[in-house]
Image (cartoon, rainbow, N blue to C red):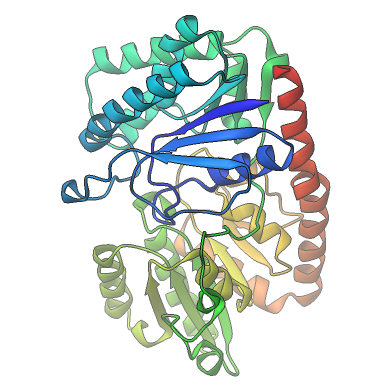
Length: 395
C-alpha cells in the first residue's frame, strides 16, 4: 500500500507535534505501507525507514507555528495544499491520511483524485476555534462544525484518540465499523535523524546534578506544558501544603515557555517554597524522560479538558506512583485502582501526594495495577493490532 500522510504542523517538534503523528507513521511503515509525509518546513527530521518526508518552505522570518489555529497556519496551509495537489497528480496513493485541518482540503480533493481518506482526529476543530480564542463568531464556528461533520461522514476510516472524542464522533456517523479508537499510548523515544551520541548524555541537561539535589529527599515530578488548563497553580499551592508536612520533598516542573516559568516561579516564591521548586523550562523528550525516571511520585494536576493526556500512558507503564486530578480528561483511563485521584484543588492534591508518599502498601498495589492495565489495553502490541485492523479496512 502507498499512502500520503499530511500533517500541517512543525514536524518533529517537542514544542508542538502530537506524538501520535509520529507513532502512527512509524507503525504503518513497519507494517509495510510506503509513505510520503507532507508537513511544514519547521521541525526536526526523524528516522523512519520507508517514509519520504516532504516539507514546504520554512518561512522562518514569520516565526514559529504555535499549537492551535492561527493566521500563520492559514498562510502555511496554502503551500501544503499546493504541494499536496502536485503529489496527487504525480503519484497514485491508496489512501490519504489527514491530520487535523488537513482533513478539509483532503475532503474537497477526494472526488477528483479518488483516494480513500483517513481522518486522524485529535480534537474537534470547531471547539479549537473557541478553546484557543481564535474567534467567537457563531457563523464561522457553525460553518466549521458542518464541514467537520461532512468530513466525518465521507471518510473511509476515522481515528480518534480518547473515549470522549470517540463517543462524540459516534453521534455523527452511522457506520461505526470504520471508526477506530487508537490511544496515543506508545512510549518509545522519537528516533531523530542523524542524532549524535551526545543526545543521550546528561552532560548538557538543564539539571545535571539532579541526583545530588534529591539525595535523602522525595522527588515529585510534573512534565508537560504549562498552559492554564494543566493546573500548575493548583500543583504549586498543593506542594506548599506538602512541604509544610514533609520538608524532605522537592518539586520538579519540566516544560514551559520562559514567560510561563517566570509566572509560576513567582508564585512559588510568594509561597516561600522557591528553594524546593525546580523549573527546567522546555526540554527535549529524552531529557524529560530522564527526569520522570528519577521521580518518587509523578503528577498530573490538569484542571480541565476532555482529551486524555499522552503522558498518562507513560505514567501507567513507569512503575512510579501517580497522583492525578479526578476529572474526565483523566478518568477515561485512570481509576482509583491505578492512581491516587484527587479533586482539582490545592488541599486535596496535597493530601493525595502525602497519602501516596506514606501509604506504601496501597501505593505499591496501585503501581502494579497500573502496569497491568497498560500491558492489557495500551501496550505497543495492542497499538499495532489496532493499526493492522485500520489498514485492513482500506485494502
